[in-house]
Image 1 (cartoon, helix red, strand yellow):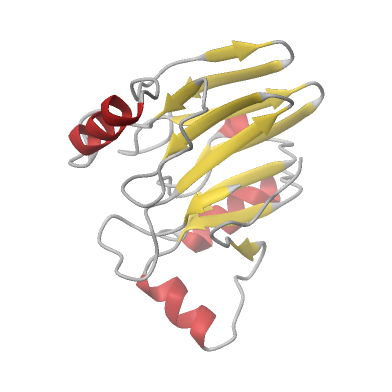
Image 2 (spheres, rainbow, N blue to C red; image 1 turned 30 degrees about the vertical axis):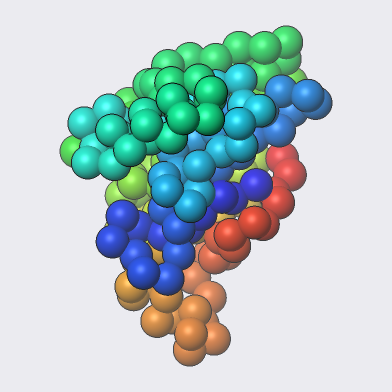
Length: 177
């Protein structure tokens, strides 16, 4: 479930965040004030600790009793989550595997990493959308969801236009892989 689809400065949407539910296991990814994962998560994984919002995430975790946000791996049964490097100056992204299915959380990446090849579901950002779409097609991504929407993407949405490939993410939207 997407907890938020905004950029850090968005006045329209909460910061981009994801909640992965696998059976009774819940793992949160990124987010921020207004899009933090629920208190029941077993892990809160972030793409960077040097982000300006990181101290606020730590405060939220401390106040609610959630796990401290971390750049880390997570494993529980068939659910395997690994932080992996992204191309360029972007921080890490996450490869999320459950059985034979794979999802990718890379909302700050321009283009896509090679390790997204054949992914069932990829959550990406709209900055560098043309590069991301080209990479998704080349890497045979089955479903592309733009989960971090910049002003240009919001203007396209308001005009009724979709991305050239994939779909706009929706806050509260549930996605299956």
